[in-house]
Amino acid sequence: MTKSILTLVAVCGLSSSLALAHIDEPKAAAPAVAAAAPAWTNPEFAKLGAMLIGSWKSSAPVAQGDDASKSTDVVVHFAPVVIEGMSDTIYMESARADKLNTPYREAVIQFYKSKGATHIRTFEFRRIPGVGSSVTGLWAAPDAFPKFKSSDLIGTLNLAVTLSGETATAKTPTAYPTGLGGAIEMTSEMNISASKLDIADRGFDASGKQVWGPAAGAWTSFSRFDSGVKATRLANGIIAIDYTGTGTEPFIQASDRVAAHYEGWLASGYKFDSSRDRAQPLNFLQGSLIPGWNDGLIGIGKGAIRRLVVPAAQAYGDRARGMIPANADLFFEIEIMNVERPAPAAQPAPAKIDGAAPAKADPKTEAQIVEEIKRKAAEQANKNIAADEAAKKAEEVKKAAEEAAKKAAEAIKPAK
Image (cartoon, rainbow, N blue to C red):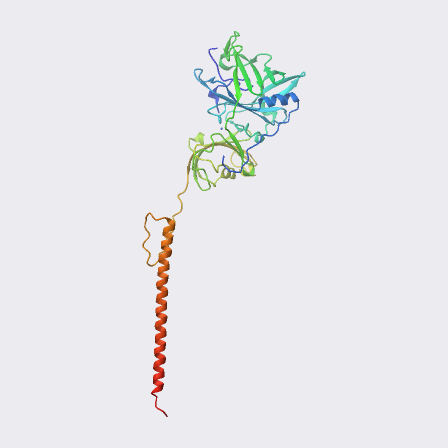
């Protein structure tokens, strides 16, 4: 095919170009976030889930949708999540390998039974203009996934599943309408196992000619890998997701002067603030903002990109603030641009001791200087003791002379 675009790249069926991209030591003892055990309603769903859940990377670069002459590695993450009114659901996120914090696709898949057969259905989030994403990165912390309902999703494709031993295939039983890349309809199919994932989305024009996607019999293949993204549970229910490690020193501590770009979302996905929209990073004194930031940024440095899930109690609590309603959990992406540490307070000058030379820089060690001060203090004390002894002796001589003069006066006193 002469034209190829990054398509579902994870069981979603709807093609998306890269141009549509849209956000450890913080505390040494902080535990990593453990994924909750999914509650499957059917043994086949449990088997499919075990095959899919995790992180996958394309075995070869994939042609970019915004420029077919370029290609890039693609990463796909799957994690079980809870959607009110639905069961057996998985959150799926696709991103370029070099831009993991800005996925170009976020969707939900569901396993279900129809007429006794197993199916996979794909869903998109309902979004209005201006609404961003609160779910980015939460494949790494699925227990923090916002409380979405089935009505917040739009069904897109249906794939019929065939399980055979430790593998499965999934395929759309018919073509589905699309308007991407000059196609009017598309098909999707997958091969799934515990160690390999194959995906093939293909678009066809009005004449039935394939206009994008891999050729018949070809696949985009993925294998499991460690993305390096780490989710950590901090104090008071705050969750931190780090994409680029902890950055460079100095690492943030209380009272540091910090510059950071950030975006903030409500659980619904509504973006309530963004320094990037203003093209001006936020400058602040660490410890002067909401508790979620005061605790959530400690231990990272310049260059770190961190997602924070901040419970309402660590944000504004029961107070509404602008577009943020009362009791709202908040979702942030924060990139640390700079960290400045205050200069240490000036040390007081050493006490002056009589006879000691004025303080000056020399190559002596601190211990040698202390010993010299002790020695000079001892010499001064000895001089003081000697002066005291001399004064005492003079006083004794004076008293003795006075006593002798008294006796002499008595001796020559005339008799009566």
